[in-house]
Image 1 (cartoon, rainbow, N blue to C red):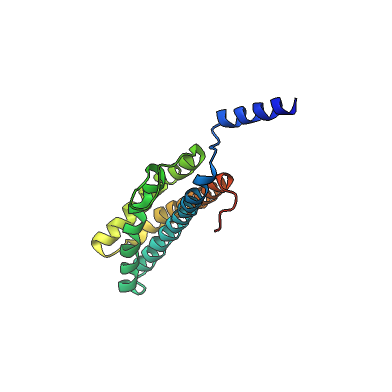
Image 2 (cartoon, rainbow, N blue to C red):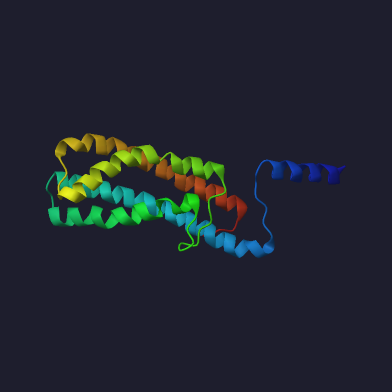
Length: 167
């Protein structure tokens, strides 16, 4: 009876889409899980760094430093944005296998487009119009909320696969 229950539980778990790992997969999976969590956390930090600098640019506070920060944060944010979803051999990431993580990452797309437009316009013109800050403020709050959710969802999904993930 217990064997039948365990077998049924394993079949149900496999059917629910929970990945199973062999012992050989543990080390590489743990490394990839930590990398995914770190990339998500770094994306969150970079998005806020761009917004902070944009606000400083709009208020003309330390304009040179304020201009440098979104410029320096933009490419490192945009370049790895696709990697956690679709994989990137150079970063050592396979395509994401958890639908919950993909959903959390996709929630960032719409507010990021608004934030991206303001930031890229500011990078091109070396200034940010003060009247663009309301849209940037709302978009950045949405990006931050969704990035926090993506970091949490990524950590939760991947720590379930490899419970001893060191953050």
